[in-house]
Length: 493
Image (tube, rainbow, N blue to C red; front, side, top):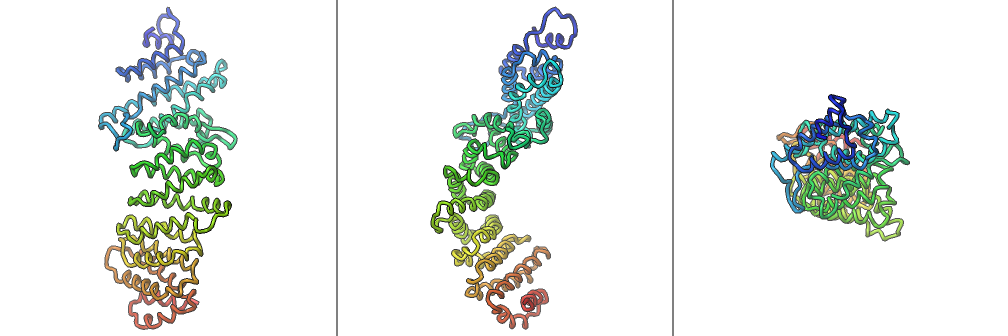
């Protein structure tokens, strides 16, 4: 029976000389037609009309979840982004190919929406209900989710229409699963319930291997977009599935992929128990992968790596204590030593800002043990306080916070460093006050206040030596703003 005749028969239009063939047969034929290429738009249009016109009993009563699953997979492949070579450096294709993909995706998404609406209606039918619809939903939800996640965010192969359809499709999936959000759809409603994340990872696993993951440009984005939805305590049960692809992404030569991989690793570190991460030496594997990235000269990558390491280091330290390893093997010392080495020679402002922003957290993490690094840290602080880095002064503000934390944790070592630190702080205060550039007044005030707090702390740990040294400066200073900062130091008890 021709498709148009089948639609008329299902709509009860015209003569009923022929009974419609089984739904499974029709779906298989449609999938074959679609995979042949030409006329895909027409097939999709007719398929949407067919699903809308079909009776639920005819469409689902034959209990053919496999046939529907194969059709959904064929439809998803029809709207997939253009394939690329495994070793290609950039995304392939031209704008026209991506535009065509976006249009196909919008049409396929519309078909999926009609299918889910039909399944929702079939749940309420006495002859079908959940016993029939449940297995079908279980078969099609994973592929439909992967399709929606491929097109829901702005990518080269999407447009406004395909993104809108994908967002509507995700909402429909959540409703069909009786969930309240995408996260609940993936992980389950409670800790004991298994969501659809396992099914999604089962689909992605085929394309997240070392030899295949670059051929489909959407796979890495689907994985990295999906993973953050699965949090503690659910993520630990999937650790063996999500850790290898995250490491694979972070080990690529392209910065974009490295950043994606490191963000995935960071999410895993935050949402998997430390005991699971330390088992089989997983935490050490992640640490070495991140540590190697510290030799990069790209600021965005260094930023995500340092944030990730700051959350991984306590886990490594806990494992070290449990194994009763000697203190010199501490990973935090290794990381900070390398970071300070790079900071000394770094001249690019973007990297200096990233390092200066992360440095206070490393000082707080080490505590009194920061005394091991004081010699190199002092050189970094003095060098970075000298240089203005622009209107927002992120570097100087970060270094002042670093100095403040260093004084608080390693105060017994500060008196011997008082002359050089005092000179550097006073020079910076004068530079800030006399700056006639574009630095906003609130930023100047924050710098002067930060320097004042450092002077007060230095005075406390040196038993009043700062007050004595500043007496002559305070008496000869004629600039009211600097004089006010010095007065706060003098009057602080």
